Length: 173
Image 1 (cartoon, helix red, strand yellow):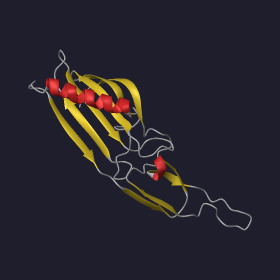
Image 2 (cartoon, helix red, strand yellow; image 1 turned 180 degrees about the vertical axis):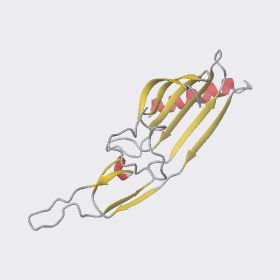
Image 3 (tube, one colour; image 1 turned 60 degrees about the vertical axis):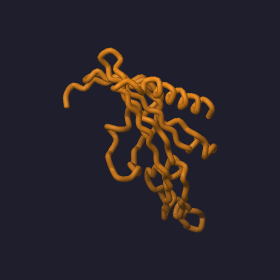
Image 4 (cartoon, one colour; image 1 turned 90 degrees about the horizontal axis):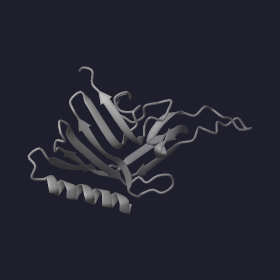
C-alpha cells in the first residue's frame, strides 16, 4: 500500500510542477459503489459474484435432490474507487496522458485493501499511440460486448487489468 501512496503522491507532485503549462490539465474522479445481488441457483462466477458466467448444471444426491438448486447473494461496497486523469504536456509531437486509479477490493482473501486498477502513461501521435503501464487486458474493452450489466457470459477471462506495452495504429475511423 505504501508504494501505491508513494506513486499517487509522486503523480500529484508532478501535476503541481506542470500546472503552469497551458496544455496541462488533470481531473480527479471517483465513485462510491455498493452492490447487492441475489441468485436463485448456484452458478459459475468470478470476482465474488460480480461477474456472472452461467448457472451450474443439475447435480443430484442419492435422494434425488439437486445440490445446485441453492439460493445465494451478497452485499458489499468494495468497488468504491478513486483516480486521476492527466492530460499534456506535449513530448515532441506526441500528446501525453496518464491515469492512476485505485479501489479497495484487494485480492484473494484480502478484502478492503487498496488495489491498483490502472497506472499508465500514453503517448499519442494521432494515428499511432504507445501505452506503458497497467490497464484493461487487450481482449477486453473494444472487443467485449457492450451491455448494461457486467454479466457477459464470456467463456474466457478477459475481464482483467494487466501490465503491458501496447502499440496501436488507427488505420481509419
